Length: 305
Image: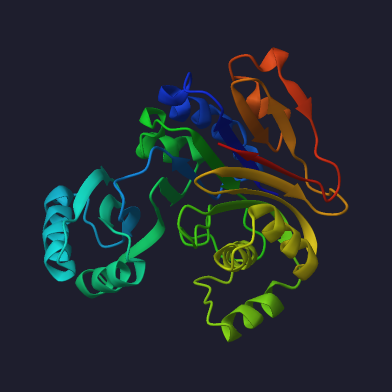
């Protein structure tokens, strides 16, 4: 059992409050997932030709000047890549770097300079936060309430089939601006993981949700729409699931063909909100007048900017 939250803002009215709206939604679902939590937050894109890279650095010592370590890394990467790299945000676990959109080159140079560094998300719009612990503590530690943007997703995890680690926590973000959060379980994830590996697509963890994320990423990379990619999950993967998947332009949900896992959708003229339980969205402005419904079995909903 895990908890899913998401907020897609249709207008600019609440963009400055995105983090303040998401944090209590996530905290409300702690009982569905006390092991770890994470969020993907979307804001206006960085300059063309560059991506945001959400970088976790496991070897940072909180008792030392971590900003100095990150600043040194930024200078080294700028030299290695022959292009300007900047730090958009220092974080307790690392930093959000702005670097060229040459992902393979950036991750390769980063691994050489800091073998303890991991890119947990990348793209022109997205920032990804993943951590182990209570949702409230994670939101406080990463100052999520201060985040602004037009879209965000979150997840609270109760581990059932794989370890409780930061890498195993959600969201999974294998492609530029793509993020997935999942409640449920896939029974044939090992088989699909092997198929993906044969195609050169490697999973970092043994988590079943990562397999679904990379399957969707494969389809999107091949030119499929997000809706078509979600249909592919239903065709290739077996299990009980609710998925919330986002890109820089899209916000989509799907439940399995039996709708075994809960999902509530609330839509107003200003936003679309999704949560595993209605109580998690009761703090949203205007929720009393929202159109509220539960997607039917196998039904896919996609909203676009």
